[in-house]
Length: 363
Ligand SMILES: [Zn+2]
Image (tube, rainbow, N blue to C red; front, side):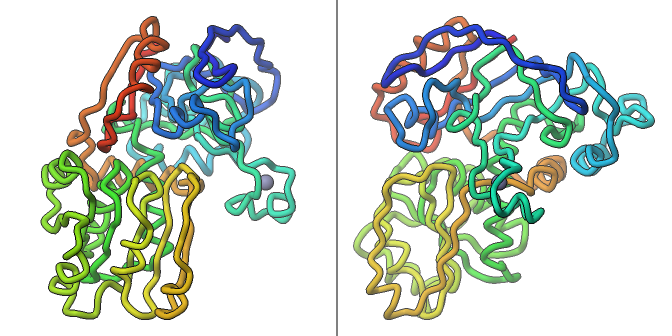
């Protein structure tokens, strides 16, 4: 497999690696598109969480070019639900869609299979996930080998450009579960990054009322284009404005997006007494929280840092048009120009929702 890896701080170089393909129940995937995220730029900057050298790009999609072994009963769990929207001619009788030529989404997070939680069968709470682009190779490469249970088949109704957001939608789907969103309920979302804007769309889909808070003009415009009615600027009147919308009791549900550059005090300030405050995002930057105000209000904290377990649900949400990803204007490049473009973008000071995202055409 050929790819581009981060060897050292700010250093990308071409790499050629041998990848074993002798496991039963695995597939070899030709990567067709990769998505470089803010978290990948963090790896390039030097991230204590990352294991170097590492091939970046957390997200990738591709086509199966080879399958190995028998397709076991367990593999159908992942493939079957996404499979429902696949026409019969594309779905093999006993392969549950895992066949040559099929478009797939390899999962960016894979449970380690070795920790205490995994040994108990609670892989959803794995304590050391293999994360693409951080602790396992990402998708800036031509081929990848994945076990069947860690790929999802893409139905034709989910386009490549939608499929690149599956992990974001999965993360947001998990947040909706964690905060136990009720119909008609206000959800204050602090941070209008891509996850924040997708979350707001899902809140509407579940008949809640999102209030999106940000301090970046471009993000507010993107949010409005995505159909969000309540978008507020994070200024010194923000608590008054939220109180006006929520009937003075402030919000019972607040989500702070870790990908935003906003102060966590804003999230705590907008939370009512006994509210649930969820910290969510793929990145785990150094975040400080003022615990005394959390204690005064007796807040409940939740944390979500991946979409593991919600991938197939996310594919169905995209197939059902619950989220409009066309509002995101993301730079695109060919693989030959990828290193140069990434180096340029790393120096840019565009902190808007899509400013640190790049689609790389790997064909
Ligand atoms: Zn584990």
